[in-house]
Amino acid sequence: MEIPVIVGGGLVVIGVGIGIGLTGKGAMEAIGRQPDASGKIQVAALILAALVEGIGFAALFAL
Amino acid sequence: MKNIKLAFFVLFSLVFGLYTYGAPLADISKNENTKGDIKTEIKEYISHHLKDSHSYSLTSWVDEDTGKKVYLELPLPVILYDDGFHFFMSSKLKHGKTVVESSGNFYRLNYDKSKIFKTNKEGEFRYDENNKILNFAPIDFSITKNITSIILVAFIMFFLFSGLAKSFSKNKGISKGVGRFFEPIILYIRDEIAIPNIGEKKYKNYMSFLLTIFFFIWFLNMLGLTPLGVNATGNIAVTFSLALLTFLITNFTANKSYWGHIFWMPGVPVLIKIVLAPIELLGVFIKPFSLLIRLYANIQAGHIVLYSLIGLMFIFQNWIGSSLSFVLAFFISIIEILVALLQAYIFTMLSALYFGFAVAEEDH
Image (cartoon, rainbow over all chains, first blue to last red; front, side):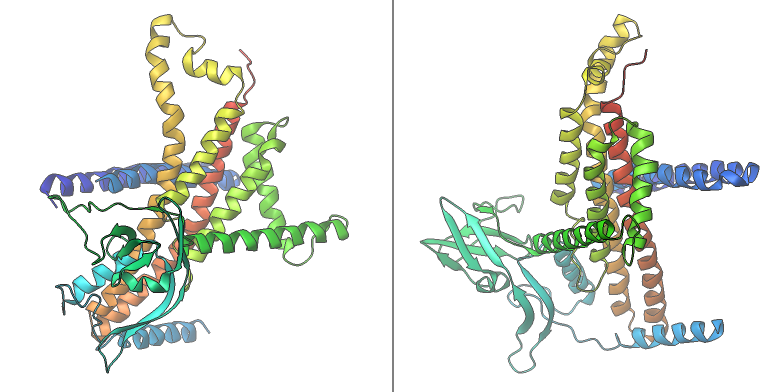
């Protein structure tokens, strides 16, 4: 395992972490503002997290 | 009551962890080099179990007297096409140790790659300088473990849903028994996934495909997590065929405005249209490709992590390391159950989204 591969893998995981974290932050704030809509917000947040994770996994497997 | 459950769980994980103490090292391949290093053995074991295999093996142990490995397995038929079909049972392959003769040709299973190659009478593999195998590999139509699992899920789905349909029609629309669990799910797929994305007029054409894909992926993922389960969706060929179906249906039922949006996007200046056309054309291929990679990578990564954690139990052979690894593996299994449902849902929802793009009405 060469050094560039390892560093690239780490960067991918950092990117996925930041992406899902920001999605979660938006979701939490939105639920805080309107607790009635929490069902729809949960569904949308879960879908977006899976999309971001998809890119992360694709990059990790292509490494 | 809660304290009793917690105490029971801790005790169970301790006992399960202690089970790994002094686990005997089995000899995977007697005529090759690695012997004794438990990490290498675990790595070989994991990488063999993540792949497809020609026989459904339940367990194996090393016989004390002869020192050979004894397998308890169900052999599946092997069907090869090499200028004519060859049939034999996979028990003749003996896990890559012997050469099988079938109407003049000799075949041998390569244990590391789980693939059958055509060899000469002694069963040699010829390697080139990059360690790739140069032998010819016949087209393999055999019934392997993954195919058995897919056929099993197909039977389960067929009998389950035809039984549900019959009980619906007998009870005049009120569901009884297992129907009470599946009816909200089916209505959810219709009301929240199909109608918002595809529209009121045309969603019925696509409902059967969406329902089939959802339950197929969900049942296959869940079966892969059970003890005798098979890692079917973790195989890129399986997810490739599912994504190929979405691709074909999107492109063959699309109307003119869809193709117009790809090649000649209305409403933008001509120079930008020429730049956008190749990008949109790439997008036609990349969108189903991302479906394929997402499902494959999620399920395969989950299995790799689970296998590695269970292997970790055998590396730490003391009471605290093994028990903690067992607890960790347990919690990751629970997350994998959530991932199974979530990935099926995401695949279905994105397929519905792409179908919606294909049949969108022109309303400029």
